[in-house]
Length: 277
Image (tube, rainbow, N blue to C red):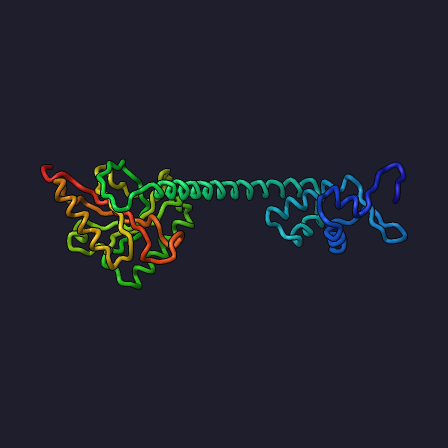
């Protein structure tokens, strides 16, 4: 019943307070989600300031992905107990989403750092660099895999990265055993890998490198990869090194930034040891 001592708001006024258009409030009224306190003889809707809190909760739940139908179901059985349970449930959802966003933010930072570093690299230069021990998450063994087995292994690897939240934003690389590289089977990878700067318990990891690497860059498709390896082996021999246990390849520039495969850039890291050792 109308109380002249209480300030009521028209649909337009209440919409302004809620920062929505009038049609939103009219729709909420039509579906029984948020009805005005009363309607006068002319059908004009009037709202009270007390209803703003309800509107805020509805918008909050919508933001969290709750459908209007589910919100209606809650309102049909609303009570202090059900509201508390609902808020606790939504709190868990927010915490999970926050963790997901933190992972995404970390991945974006890795991408930014990687591309900023790549912008200052001379891809024609071959260097010897000291690498610390690095943790990789590996795919299943794909050495000598058939095309079908390779496709399955890649799909399973990517699926596991996603399911276990192991996608760190670093490029997916391929590691090749010494024996295959010496036999010129440069792309007969033993495993795919992704770097894990903060490895979590409960997953099998591989500790890689921890030593000197001969680092070079291949521009182009895999068909011309042998030419880059020939250059690397020549430098290795001149510097008095021999090939170590593994070689690692990962894209620096791929389809993300280059339209043509001939422009792709692959980083090649070859574990090396002194011949005298």
